[in-house]
Length: 275
Image (cartoon, rainbow, N blue to C red; front, top):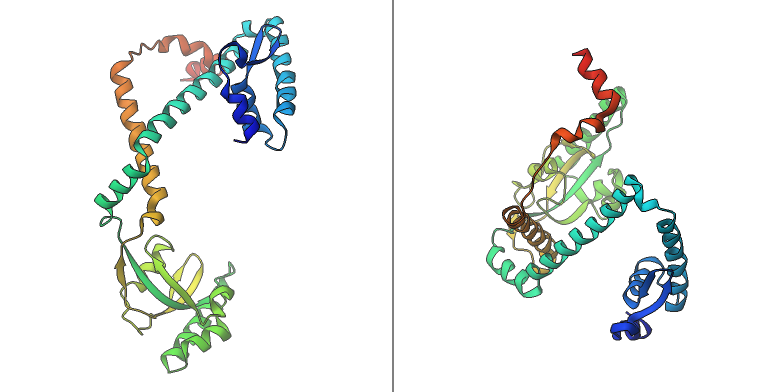
């Protein structure tokens, strides 16, 4: 937050109120949230003006009795419920996803995070939808395979004929590719190739390929930074599941499903009659 917003949040008590809109007291934290989530290009004063406008509308709605409307009251409660639920999840996730906790998790699990890696070049012929054109595409890939198998330089053929422009100009070189980064059918077709070995033509969702291994396959352990996001997501998921289990034990729930019948309305009644 900027210096101005920092000053806004510094005060407490009655001085924390920055505007009274009817019976609603707007506080520094209200302005800070509105400013952060709505318009960071505005000044805090402009954010306050905009927030006052929204608060005036809400105050008018309250005076008009809209909170007595069950649909409106349900929307208000839903917003409150979602804010609290997400804030609680964020708090628990933050506690379980500290930098130290993630690094400890990485050290414990890094071997299981290892992935096979290949470094290959490939020739590509796109597969059109038309049946006749697909037959011609298969003939083209077979011809390219025959050329490189017959001794022509793979990179030269790729630059000349591959229909993958991004790799074709580099002689078909895909660079190092790890398991999970490409179509599984592609990875499975090349992972057993020895250095310098040529694959037979094979098909993936991206077209027809012929691949050549530029290096022998190997297993690599990703760095902490490479998997930090994955570790954080797993830590958050596990923390959320643990929290749900804890709350199931600590907070009782009594359901009244029979009271939901009226929500189905005429459609349910009609369906029941037809059975």
